[in-house]
Length: 77
Image (cartoon, rainbow, N blue to C red; front, side, top):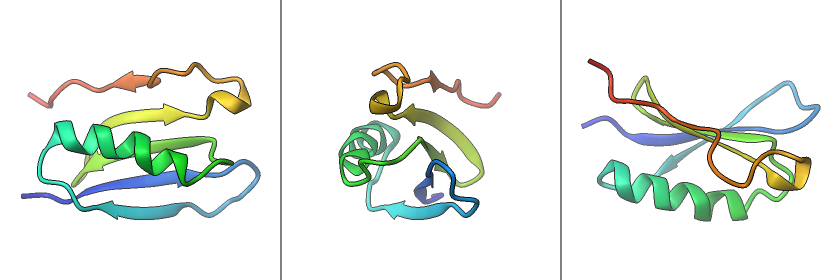
């Protein structure tokens, strides 16, 4: 089983923050992504991954992005 983790992009910061989520499945990872974003009020985007597979990207509505996820990526074939 691959770990679920987030990559946090901050405006004007060249380095990224990475955090591993303590979840068991994709549904709970998506829920935890929203809670995780609440702890990073200045984030630009937060990308959710399982191993090397991208799952979703969340953008900060306070910076003018849409409130919903930018994308939910389909399962790899």
